[in-house]
Length: 246
Image (cartoon, rainbow, N blue to C red):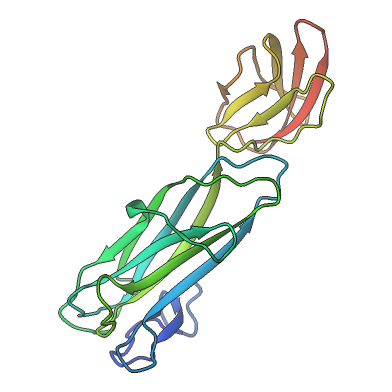
């Protein structure tokens, strides 16, 4: 573990950083410290595994996290954290420069009286598609920015990771004879698939009406919770009620 005033000769490896005293701080971040010592840590990977447990295909993901600094480092190349992703945990794809966070070298390797001393927020869209029950692996790689000399290392960690579906149907609706699908996507748009002419009325679970629309991909009001959407097909008169989450 590490927190305030991490020593310049602190042990290399994977760390559970605390924003304050290493043993008692409740705000934690996972990260690491590298070294140039023989057989020591040259880089650190922080892994997360997710599964699409919905009944819909995920078309992309919005990823957000913080990169936090817990000790200075004077390696002339500086240090960076780069995000990678994989569908099987073996074959990895670089998530690109939008998910690369670089820290320039400091003049020393001093610990810090207040940590994290620097917090960099990273956010962007990851162009991955996940079928139902498919896994996704994320890996944040900490290493020297260039070359293989890993001494003079900074202490960097990952915190506040958020993964949100983008363009993924969040609503839950059963099959119907006309294959009508009702859901709310990541942009808060009410989507009605399978019908050209319809009326859709949104209700709270207590029966109070929220709105009524006749156009697919209508932006929904800033409400949250579980709602019921009653859809009536103008052509057949068929009525379908779907539960959605906003």
